[in-house]
Amino acid sequence: MPNSENTNLKKTGLYKDNIQTRRRIAALFQYFCALVTWTGVFLLALLLYQVSVDGIQWLDMQFLSSFPSRFPYKAGIKSALVGTFWLITLIAIISIPVGVATALYLHEFSRKGRIHKLIQLNISNLAGVPSIVYGIIGLTIFVRGLALERSLISGALTMSLLILPVIIIASREAIQAVPMSTRHAAFALGATRWQTAWAHVLPTAFPGILTGVILALSRAIGETAPLIMIGALTYVAFLPEGPMDSFTALPIQIFNWVSRPQEEFHELAAGAIIVLLAVLLIMNATAIYIRHKTEQKLK
Amino acid sequence: MTNKHTLEKRGIRWNEYFIRSGLGLCTLSSVVTTGVIIYILVKESLDFFTEVPLMDFLFGTQWVPLFEPSSYGVLPLLWGTLVITVGAAFIALPVGLASAVYISEYASPKVRTIVKPLLELLAGIPTVVYGYFALTFVTPLLRSVFPGFNVFNALSGAIVVGIMILPTVATLSDNALRAVPDTLRQGAYALGATSFEVTTQVVVPTGLSGIMASFLLAISRAVGETMAVTLAAGATPSLSLSMQESIQTITAYIVQVSLGDTPAGGIAYKTIFAVAGLLFVITLALNTLSQWILSRYQAEYD
Image (cartoon, rainbow over all chains, first blue to last red; front, top):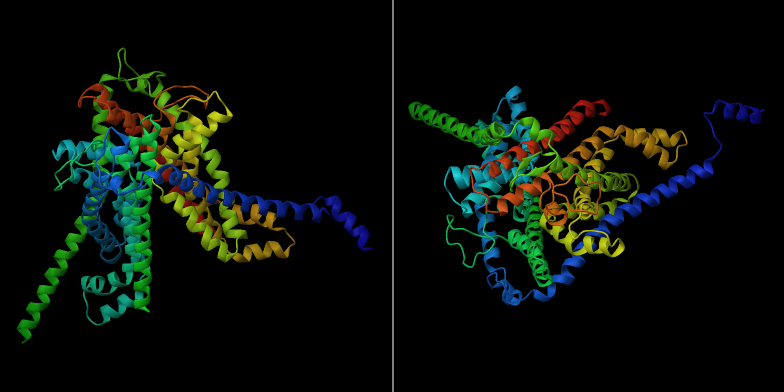
């Protein structure tokens, strides 16, 4: 009688004997997902390939050591490169201490009440504010309000506002991952909160914090919109000597060259993009290396 | 001896107090930042709205702020932003979700450790580079296939923004799918479901809150995207339906003003605060909704 039972089941509409089709759909679906994913990877490869093909011919010492110019064959990225290094140093000096301190306070010191929750919410909302809005704020507060003009320090302060939420969130996650037992052990030996945080929590969380910080800084290196807002000059034929000097930076130089109609300038932009991506790659590799080292040491 | 001991203790206590206050002050800086952003946007926008009625701004269909006779209807800019965002979402949401499904449900651990970082690399590429890619690769490609395309066109912008937000969808959705307990999958497989059925009827619905949150976050990023759309889509505010034409987004307009020589304090200059305020409200709403969905629905499946 199994046969009639089977037909009864079919009548209910709950059972359909179509395992072949269903298996085929499943296989097709798997191939589709795989294909789509590898398309994403392919796009990355295509983008990198395109940039290298366009820009590699311009990459030489002359390109790295010349100032921008109206003539493509004379133009270089010296001031942009130096500007970017200045900028990133200043951003690091401003944003790392404030960001890590905030994360420490939120996780180790503050009472976990309503205000704590509100501040957390506020920080994650700040992380979602478009970068151009930070640019407008930087223009209003730093460039005009505090009369810092279109200087390196204006740019660095604006960018610090932009990446602070990122640093705070990354540091907080690293600090959260430190086992409670570490803190309890320190407290049991009579350490104060700060002694515990400084001597035990921070060192343990260091690799995680460092990774977050470097990722945040590499975001700052590539950001263009806020710098354009605060009016970082696009033609700078000198090197900045202090935080109050005006400057240009790699992404600005790239934007400037891309927005010109001539083909040669597009190729120059590709050359500058290669340098920018190389800087980003070096930073990320450093982060991975340091993390690897510290993890080994901790073991 | 005892005296010295208490003194030392008191010193430590003071130290602790100062350090605590210092750290608290740093924390305050993030609150102050929010306050300053809102204060500036509101104050300058209010200034703007004393000269241009709010209704003309919100529902006007002409955006000609820099020339006479000027007109301050923000709809063309909003439309530009909408076109780019919807176009980008059209690419990034399905592709990102399919990638997430592949990474979390099908890929072997080895493939996973290769593919995920590669997709994350896409997210780390500066947006100005995407602008370059749009202008020198995507647009020429489009123009060689469809000759009617303008040098600056909405489709090219939408495509690169789509590629740009793809990793956000893929990584966050992957996290959401991986958080789905394995017992659910095993239960479905035990009932004879195929991998397709397990994925579409069990795993994805269970992880839906996380997937939705990742969608909203990606859309919010597309709305705030600046450099790629400025370079790819041009600077022509219009209500055109055509993806072949140049359009202007809110962000691209702000860049245009800051690159020009608009004098500070004038009405044209104040427009950037009004449109930036609008941008701020839109992205804030999207981000808040995304967080709300996460906090509201996430706990159910733990």
